[in-house]
Image (cartoon, rainbow, N blue to C red):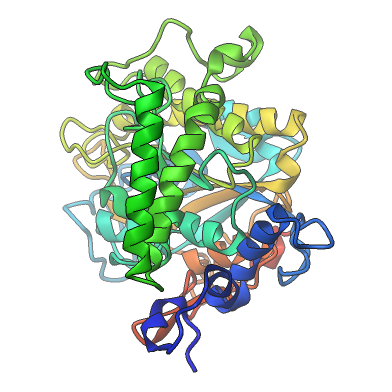
Length: 498
């Protein structure tokens, strides 16, 4: 018999909520059930940590994903290539036919900024991301990442969900589904988009797809007057008072109960009810979690936050980027320490011209400069802050982008898309700092060892491994196929493990 929660219509008797949790996800839904039973005092032992249901003891509990939307140039930030300096301006010769996205096969283009070694590891960093210097020895680098496409929407989905087409759950949704919540008053999976708007694919990047809807990301905009949409009544609703809101919620609960009684086994209503219940609890918890005025001046300075800023101009400049990304990183720390399990932070959106993202076809220095300074300051502050609070040991930080950029120039100052090679970096919970797992070739065009690239499946498998999950076992049957975050691929990157 198929016990997938998404084939409940085949059962003669609908699954109860607890049966649903226990049977779903190859048994990993039992982790969420353990938490539920723990709240009901039905377990003899504490459900945290969840070693009785995880595949092995976890090294980490939480994940932060830093996503640079638009394809950040590894060659101008992290992956130093002296050959590009030596042969700058000479005709590029890749030794093979190259499929370029646009007309991006001009002469070899040296890094836009100078590189210098930092830390005991001597890692070469571009001066534009030198703010990472204090934490460079905590970071592990992957310079031989490869993608499957040079199209932004597909590449973004691939890094977010493990598939380059829509209708698949994001990594944050899988982690939420597999591990459940560590708090009752805030979402398990939170998304902090770019303050100017959403990246390619919009909300599909954090969608739960065929997983229960409560596992999709909750969008929060730190710094806005209304960080969470519709959490509180609109100002125009001055007729709403606590008594009327309480009575309205009671009526809604009765209507939901009647609706559910006629549709047993339908998980969608249960997810909707949970979202309403969570929203009610968030009205108390979220304002406190996002209130950075409680932070010390020293902390605000570390994150590059200016107290007088609540909105940012549309043009890109370094001061605004540092402030905006720093606010998101500080909000992430406050959410993590309150039990949020997965936080996704975005830099760059999909608004086209002039560039508000990392898609630097015309001018790498103009587009990358402010964005790079912004993320580097914020990420370094987040790493240091988590470390001093004892949270970095069990928090994984992943920096990613949809693909890289070509070592040849486009129009003299820009770079075209390069899905054949790019960089990811990781640090925190169970990651060995100061190491490199996988190098690119002398140009940064393709992996040095072309037969052994690193793919997003390997990164996802490694993160799940550090969370205590065997990536091959976290699966859900959907449309007759056992689906998982890593599809049918993925290997744990052993060299990254501490």
